[in-house]
Length: 287
Image (cartoon, rainbow, N blue to C red; front, side):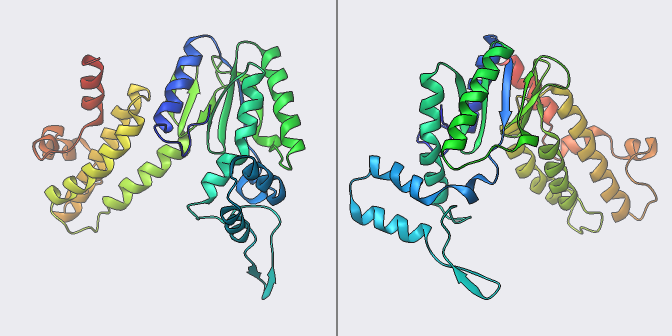
C-alpha cells in the first residue's frame, strides 16, 4: 500500500501498518532502496503509465514539456530522457504514479508491502517468502528501467539484533521502535543551533523558541523507545546550563554537580520547558 502524497494517508499511517504487520508475525523484512530513483525514472515508460489514466492530451503534453525541459550543464544544453526535476511539486506525484504498478504487482502476489514515495519495505513471515518477494521486485525493477542499490538491499529477521530495518525516520529492531541515528543527529544539530552559548536572549525566550522545535519532533517520534526521551531531556538541560554559565560569566559547561545545583531540573520546568519524558509517560497513562 502506498501512503505517500495520497489524500487521507501519511507517514504515521504507514508506520502504524508496519507495526501491525510486525505484531502479526511478519518479521522477515526486505529493506531496499531504488538507486537514484527520482533521477532515473524513464520518461517513455512514465508517459505510458500516465496515458492509461489520463485521456486529456493537453495535460499529457504539458507533462512531457515539464519532463523534457532543457538542462544547462558545463555551458551545454541537453534534454534528459529520464528523471523528474528535483524540487518540483509535480515530481513526487509522477514518481508515485510510476511505482503504482509495483504496488499492484506485489499485492497481487500476496506479499505485504508498505511504501511512502520511494521509501518502502516488504514484510514476510519467513526467509523463503522474503526471497520470493525480492525476486519478484527485482524482476519488476529491471523490466522498468530502474536499479536496486545492492549495498542498501537486504533481508533479515527484524527480531534479531543487528537485523533491524529503517523506515521513515525510525529503526525497527528486536521488537522495539527506535529513532534512526541520522534523525537523532539532525534533531540534536537543531538543538545545538538554538542553544549556542553566544546567544544573548533571555532563558525564557530561548525556552519558548526551543519548545516549538521539541514539541514538533516529539509529535512524530513519540512512539520511540522511552530511554530516547530521558537522554534528550538531559541533553537539552545541559545545553541550557552551559548557556547560563556563559551569560553569568561563570566557569563550567553545564555538566557539573555545581551547575546542576544552581539550575536544577525544576528551574527549567518552572519556566515552561517541554519535557519529552513527562509527555511520553502522560501519553502512556492515557491509553
